[in-house]
Structures are given as C-alpha cells and as structure tokens.
Length: 293
Image (cartoon, rainbow, N blue to C red):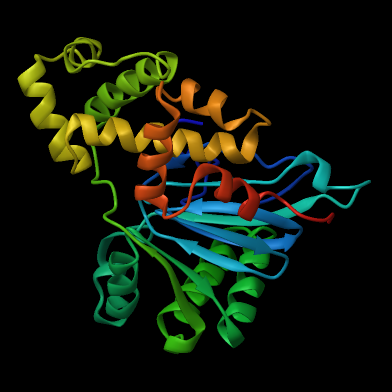
C-alpha cells in the first residue's frame, strides 16, 4: 500500500498496454509510473485516490491520469454481489509512444502539448468526448497491429480536440520526476525499509544506509527527486498510508495511527486534518463504500 514505482511490461509486439479487468475486489496499491493512464469504468462503484484528491468513480466514468502521478483504486469485496463484479478497461502508454519522426511532426503538436501538460494532473472526461474515448478504449482491448495504433491515435484526437467543458480537472500536483533505474532502486529500497518500519522511528542516517549513500548525499538526492525534505516526505507517506488503511482495513483510528508511526492520536489527527482538510474519522465516514453494485 506504500507508494511504489510500477514498471509496466508490454506484451511482445505491443508498444502500449490495453486490457480489461473484472474483479470482486480492486485493491491496486498506491503507485506511480511513467505512462499516461486512461481508466474506463464499465461496471461498479470505486474509490480512487489520485494526486491529492479522493473521488468516487462509477459505471460510465472515464479518468485520465498523467505520467508519474501517484494513485490507487479501491472497492470493498462486499460491494459486489454474485457475478456482477466491478469492471474496468485500462489503457496505458508513454508520452513518446509513437516516437521518432512521426511524433515530432507538426501535425502531432497538439497531442504532444496535451500529453506534456497532463503530467501531474488528472482529468474526468465528460460529454461527447467521453463517448468517443470509451469507444476507442474498448476497441483497443480487442484489436491488434495497425488498427490498434489507429484507435490510440483516434483516442488522442478526441482528447486534444475536446472542448473545455468536457475536461474536468481533478487534481494538480507536481508529478514525480523521471528517474534512472539506479535511482528507482535506491528509492525502492528506502520505500521497502520504511514500510517494514512504519510504526517505528525512522532516522535519516538509517534511510541513507539502506539507499547506499552518505546521509548528506541522500538528503540532497531525496529532495531533488521528491521535491520535499526527508521529514516532510516521511510525514506525507505516513498520512497517505493512513488514508489507504481507512479504506482498506477495519482497524480503528488509534490502531491506524500507531501502524503509521503516530504514537499520539491528537498529533495524528492534527497532521491529517492539516493535509486533507478533514479528520480521519470524517474521511472514513465520507468515503466508505455505500450500497451494492
């Protein structure tokens, strides 16, 4: 559930990802990746954390998540009855999916600008644009070869030519910067260490050792790659973990605060409300799943 870098492996002979999922229990971990992600909800109701916002998504919704934007999707198993499970179609592709001369052509400039601007943002697609995107996204899951590429181009045309009223901005944060594999591995080791010790005190010296760096070097590296100081980032991740546990566990608020390294409940409530605008209890009451699919 801690923030993770997700490395996507495309199938052989494919330059981007498109597939359908149907499941009683969506518990995607809190993650980010360099691909733009398009989510088409074809059945069910789910809670999504994207960037700094929490939204409810349902059948017919289309969400576009920019590259390197942290997010996760969740529903409670009890919300699906019988075989009528939640269903979602996903399309993921990198900004340079077409690469080379084609993507640098003047005709591609509007799409190039759109893809660059969506980094760190997320959009809810509405109106006639939503219908066109849904159609192409579904077709992407069923076609191969050149037809598959043509549907992705058609999808991009719909997004780049969409009227402003069809694009509702959901979040606007600074996207996590691109990283080399060595940098990803350092942060991955640190993330795993933090998750294993989340309920304990975590010192910069220990974190730097795990990353294989001197404390001062790790502090500079960390600030450059996350845009935050070590302590601020740690508090943010503790709060994000608490937010996930509010959705994905039945633990009481005190148990959650201790699991996330806040030994003082009032201190936990203060930090949580400062970050999210409501208390942990209020968030659980507001966003806990209601009703059945």
